Structures are given as structure tokens and as C-alpha cells.
Length: 535
Ligand code: FAD
Ligand code: SIN
Image (tube, rainbow, N blue to C red; front, side):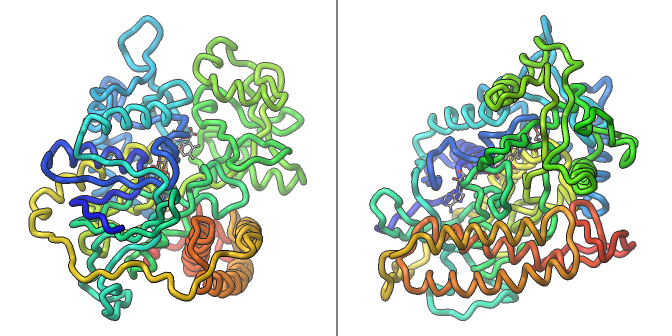
């Protein structure tokens, strides 16, 4: 099937839906197609717990403080102009989703918002809805998007590849200056057909790629598809070595994918990191103790676990008021109980898990990628806000701000972009149905082992080289499968994750210093010379 839509949005999380709503309001006569690989409500967004950071209480807080905290967490690699944009435009964007119906918790018997604090923030500035902020935002956006007849959401549609001049037979390389995107090929998972979706402009909002590691807080949809598609289309990707590990996922000996997150807001609320013997240890790492930025806390936990040979460390909440804890963190409380941990009686066992991709598709201050007519927003993009380490709760904010900026940017350009003629349909010649799915599932297992052992929280030259050698083998085997087998989401996800793994590892081997989330034993210090790793 061939489908034409003026605007094609890949992804229905906070970035995709916010953009679609904004575009639909501005361009009532334009068709907007939103693709999502499972159901509309399944996204990283839906699992966000802590909340959205925004300067709100102007008596105590101000833009300069939020900017300084973001720059400090980003460890010298943030783009200051982008940090300023996001922090200053952020509160207005949050106000908009409140107008659309998003509920954030208020203080008891008050009309004032109950602002929480998380690691790296010097003030209380996190708006939240219990520990279900993402669920509330996803609900709001889905309800708002449903009001616009020019937005159509296609569920169970898997975007496979971006369409560029390559599909017209032109030779494209990474430095080709005028690459253009004309839409994408997508697999309709319900009937197995591959459709050609043509558009005037395409917005990638495909989220992160945490599934590249064995242990991650990201849902199984987070397979870095947008980054891999852009890289295959010869677009620019940057700062991929900065994969953020959240310090406190719930340690569950039974193992689960995704790992359950114990929000940083629990530490903001008074939870204290301790050893199994009940001793505090963060004083050995940072004066901000349990509320130091994430990279520092995750490395501290990792280091203590390695020193002691233990599987986890602990978060002590036993001193906190039970009613207050349950009111703020009902989901975390219930989840802990479900595995036999009563947070009011037992310390919560925690372990770092991959959580967020700070790098991604390189975009400018209006979300434009290096490929014309292709924009990116949300976790799949690299705007320069996060630098070498994202400040807690800045991700939802960034997605809101950039979705809005892109909607403005396409305003006058849309008319000038026409549908491209001559695009061929997907060529599946010479492929047969997969005979052994186990080749794909085993490949996925190996990939995650490689990344977790060699390119995790602590890296080295030897580890990165080992990872690259093993990834190359996996790459060759998987490309052979791709050449001969009919495409399936499982095969494409493996392919995409191998690309993401390669980008992380190559950027990590290039960075001959330790900075933010990238720590290597070969170069434990920072160099005065800072650069972004663009691939
Ligand atoms: P997502 O919300 O992940 O949406 C991606 C969309 O793309 C999905 O709809 C998916 O189906 C679709 N998609 C992907 N690939 C394809 C494809 N090939 N074809 C079609 N569709 C595709 N950030 C904060 O700021 N505050 C928090 O409190 C917070 N808590 C978090 C807690 C958890 C457990 C996790 C995992 C993350 C948290 N984050 C938080 C990070 C934040 O939630 C994400 O970075 C953000 O929601 C990403 O939004 P997005 O719109 O970019 O992507
Ligand atoms: C959390 O609630 O700890 C996650 C916040 C974030 O990822 O920004």
C-alpha cells in the first residue's frame, strides 16, 4: 500500500504526540500521520516517574539556577544556548499541557504545586503526579490528540527505513550535503505488508535505546530505531557514548525486563543510600551525598558493589512517614511489596540500570537533523541540552520544548515541500520466512552481554576493542539474515540495536578522557579539550 500524509510522525510518546497536536492546531488542512510500533500508549514516556523539571516557584527559584544545575550535570559538554532555550521556554510548555488536562500533585490543602527535588537540582522544581507522571502525561496527550480530525494514529506499524534519494538510485555518503527525506517504509504488523509512506516532512520521535543493555529501565520498545534509521540514511549522530545509568533500579533476583525504577524522587524525599550493614557510603564520593548527579551516584554504587562483591546496594526509607511515602510513591511501594520488600521495614535493594540515551540524532536549535525534511525530537535526538550527563527530569521538558520549536519551524516551509515521485515499493525479492527465530533471540542475548560486560558504567580501551570485535561478528551474521529473510520487527530491532551498540562503542573508544557518564580506566581524568563525538 502507498500512503501520503503531509506530516509523518514516527512515535507516539511525549515528543511525537506533543508535536502532532501543535502541528494539527496550526495546520488544520494538513494530514498528520503518527506511527507507533505497538499501541499508542506504550512508550518510555508512559513509565516516567519523577516528573518534569521547570522553574515554578519564583520566590526561591530562577532560570539561572536551573541553567547552572543543567550545565553542572552536563560536565562541560552542554550547549549553553540550548540549555537557556529549554529552561526559559519550559515553564510555558508545561503550562500548556496543564491546560490540556495534565494533573500535577498539589501541596496538602493548597493550590500550590508540590515541587519535588531530585539529584543535581539545587531547588525543588519537579512537577509530578504521584510516581506516575509519565502515565498522566501520556494519557493527557492521547486525549488531546484524539480531538483533532487531521491526526491519524496507526498502531502496530513498524518504521523500517527512511526514504531518501538512495531509493531513487543516487549514491549517498555521509558527507553528501543535500540528502532529503521523503517518508519511510513501514511494516504493518497486522497484515505483514510493507507500506510506502510518503510525506512532505518527517519527524522522528522514536525514543531511546536502553534495550541494548541487559539491565534497563526502558520498556522493550526502546531499541534505538530512529537513531539506527538515521545513521543508515547517512545522517549525523552524536555523543552516543553518554548512556545514562540510573543509580536505583529495583534489584529483583528473579530478573525482569524492563527493570523496575525506584525514582530519584525517593532520595529527594529523604531516602538514603546504604550498604547491606546499614552504613552510608556516599560521603566517600560527593558532598551532595545521595542527591549527587546520577553519573556520580551510579558509579559510586557500582564501585561499592564491586569492592564488596555484592549484587546490590540499599535505599533506606524506613525513617520516613509511611502515609506520606505511600501517597507520593504508591507504585513503588506496591512493587516492593510484590517482591517481599516492605520499604517501611526493609531497606530497598537497588542496582544501576541503563536508563537514558543522552546522545542521538544531531539536531540544531529547531530540531532539524542533518538530512533535509527530517527533524528529530525527544530522546532519539541530541540537542546539546544534556551534554555528558542529563539532569534528572530534564528529558520530558526537552521533548515539550523541541516539539513546539519544530511545529513553528515547519510553518512556512511545508508549502514548498512536495511529495517525491518515483519512489519504488519495498523490495523483498530473494527473501524467505525466517526458519529459526532462535538466531535472532540468541543474537539479542549476545549483544546485551557484550555491551553490559565491556561498555557499561566503567570502560577501558581493551574492553571497547573486545566489544567492537564481537559486534562486528554479530553485525555480519545479522546482515546475512537480513539479506535472506523476510523482515520482522525482531530482526529489525536486533539490527538497529547492533548499530546503536556500535555507535556507543565507537564514540566511547574515541573519547580519550573520562567525562560525565563516560568513565574509562585508561584516562581517568578530564582533558581541558572538549569536543562532541559526531559520527
Ligand atoms: P518515547 O516516549 O519512548 O516514545 C517513543 C515512541 O516511538 C513510541 O511510541 C514507540 O512505539 C515509537 N517507535 C519507536 N520505534 C519505532 C518504529 N521503528 N516504528 C514506529 N514507532 C516507533 N524523564 C523525565 O524527564 N522525568 C522522569 O521522571 C523520567 N522518568 C523515567 C522513568 C523511566 C522508567 C524511564 C524509562 C524513563 C524516564 N524518563 C524520565 C525519560 C523519559 O521518560 C523519556 O526520555 C521520554 O519519555 C522519551 O520520550 P519520547 O517521546 O522521545 O520517546
Ligand atoms: C526518576 O524518577 O528517577 C527518573 C527521572 C528521570 O529520568 O529524569
